[in-house]
Image (cartoon, rainbow, N blue to C red; front, side):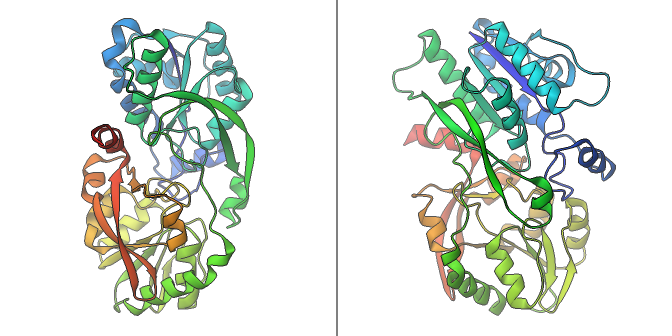
Length: 389
């Protein structure tokens, strides 16, 4: 079995510091200046560790250095290096070139660690000529070519490769299908305009419940429901508390009803009678929560169901731990929950302890004095859950 791995070493670096993306050299430099740390190497390592039982019959090919070889060695593999790296920071052009070189080696599957921008690079490099699977490591992960969790990416890859070699169990349903790659214009996104474009398709190994859906927008007809949700939240707001509002139109309705503006795709902080700070990063949010009682208000990502870990990385694990599970308010229209078709809300904070803290059942505010109880699961536990079922 021949597996390829390529890592975008700077994918996701802009998320925790509130930059809403990592595309472009200037954004990456700013993120590093603000104290951001790369996320993708560790997430790729988690995926590879899941594949260690196949080490004896698996040949792993990676670019050298930070784009694959270093992480593969740390995970316990002895990869075959392919290609060369530039002397300076890596770019999208390097990702495309190295993915093409991996394709030419004759691999059976290509794993890539990154976000929607890296998925676009895979479209350019290999398109649907080769099975590809994304390890979620970016800020915007809207495309339908990613596993729900790094470990799940490893599990899907292992199942696919085993079936390809004729050694998989008959009970593991895996198939190849074309899946959408979509991306946002990051400059427009930072300005508060969400403009999603279909860039192409990738051929992915698909397993039910292990591959995330494409992000879906909130319908404009939900305006009345959003106003009812906003009224319910504001009615319960005690004076003196901080309210951290995550991205989205649902939380934007809350700020608007308070009489304040909100960054549609940012994380903002309010009291009932004032704006405390807009478009904050994780470090600033951590500072604020040290001095004031705080509630976090988030809405699940439409079509995917993620509460934390997709697009709202400034609300990081240590902030969630500090605020506490009891002070997290989940808001959603009934229509958005129905679109999940019974699937749980998902969390992928990057910290297993925080993910475990959030799992179980949480109340979801769906209207004025209306709420339902809805299940929440860490993405890392989905595989075991569905195996038992």
